[in-house]
Length: 473
Image (cartoon, rainbow, N blue to C red):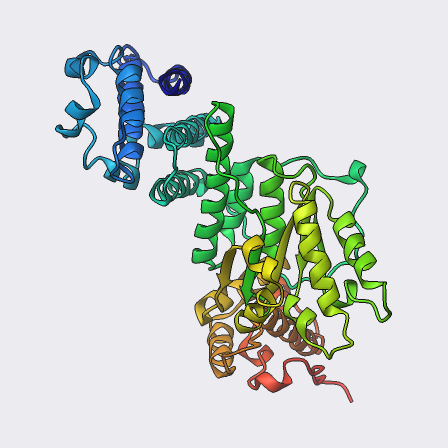
């Protein structure tokens, strides 16, 4: 069965990419296309052995599939046709081949260049077929290893970076206000987005490299389990629920919104919308009202994701507080609706430990913790610059220096504002800019769009104060 599965996806890989190369060469006079199929077959073989070598295990299932798939195809590797897994382990055909993943494919670069010259999407075909083969290789064994998932994530990141070379869009992290506990009606759900688009948007976020890696691993693990299930292999049944820890403004809600859509694309949920609540949306003031409020929140998040912000506040209160009742109902509904709602509980790291300890069922049902670190000064500067680009403002060099100095003066610790601080600085700057420019007699486009050092508050304590008007009494 494994050989048939790998053989089928490799056949599609060779057919589609050979066709892509032929199309790319169609404008080149005298181009010799006779070797293209051999070139693509070698590319497919390199991909497969690199993925097999990614965890160094070289199992019989993987090697038998490799032999059955490429033995009849590769005349220059005649020993492959009659080889056994033990034979391959004694050669260099597989061992040490993981490094291929870490290099830029010449074939891929040819297709990217053709797309740039001709306005085609041939490199997209390479990406799609390559990721399909990589996922199938990872699904061949009884257990998919973390090293295999990391290899898939590394390969995807490298290819998407090449595809995004022609893109010039950015994404900033705007602060989010918890939404009311109501979901959009199904007919208003946006179209489902592709995994490539969602992961590209994730990768475009400023910073958060460790977070991105964890999300890639979650997505790749789910995809591999789906492939195993489709092939009649046992799939590992794991909890999809998550804990996000970190200071405010570190992108927790932004990542949750993307992850909800990723779960939709992977078929975990049908809608992939995000419903945000906090303590006020879950806890009532009277006996018997808290459980229905929690149930209503789960109802609103049906076939999507429920994001509980500052979840630790549910355990803060006296004996008569109903936060514990909310937690008990959450644990019940997590189990009852495990196939319909994905839960993300978010808050400060230490306080979230208290939350998970409040009920014996919480920790086992929310096993995955993703930590969101604070942004460093360079990352906050990038976020502010992206906010400016979106509104057609840019920082003059002296303003850039002033922002850097201001960020360096803000104490870092629990409660540090991160992207929210960046937005406050940006809004304070454009307010002061308006106060300065309105006094000019006939400001030009440059004056209207350039933030100078004078527009940047020197003291972080006055960021939220209204600007002092110049030139008016």
